[in-house]
Length: 300
Ligand SMILES: [Mn+2]
Image 1: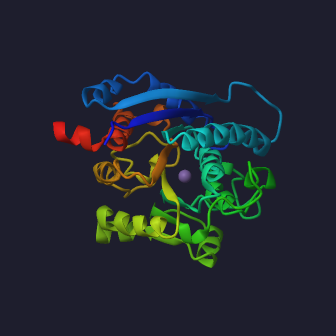
Image 2: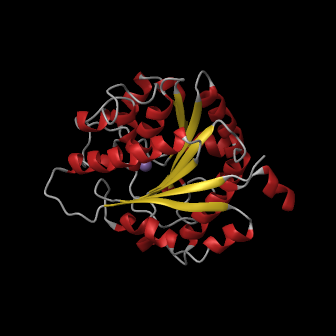
Image 3: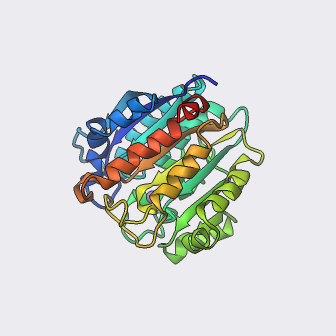
């Protein structure tokens, strides 16, 4: 197998989140001294695109996110068509609207898209149910076709995901209305309690079966707040008792050579809350895990 190359896309936007800090996430990662570890491991990567919210605008947030989402979706669609393995680095989790709309655009004629969503939250609010009004709490619902029309229709009018091809892992904080929507649609949710009881590896294995069933391929969307905040404190909305960072690293390594995986997304890293660069270091390790190929494994 050829060495795999990671195509890194920075989504330096935080307009849809709770605080502005995670706008700096991709910038900190681009300058991270830990990137040297990727070179040591012979992991190939390149920075392909930077989406920034530098332009201040008086427009409603949904229109701003629509603009970023469309930009991101077009970039990702091109990459998937060229069979390049992408990793989107956020930024708040509204990135998912653009990322997976882009993958959908590239592959909808061949088949359906599977998605593993790793998050402490459900991100399944709609404009009708949200209390905060923040769009970073809505991307799952949006991709399923529920939400602001400006966002559910990016590149295509159709929903980008079918509920049976989606699953959530690590959930431990949510509102009833979100759970109602996902339960009604029969989306498989691996709550944190189940992850603790069965282990991340077993749960991830079952998740892979779901996203590989009658799909053309799948992707992974990681919210850093899915992790235990003692290990990865660099987030705006920490929730205790999360996934162990090493366990996530291990399952990501296990799919590094999987040709059915289109790419990944790592969102909600807020460097202002990081302690001793713990979170930054883990994100680089996740990149190393995603970029490790069979060739690289032989060196270890
Ligand atoms: Mn999220």
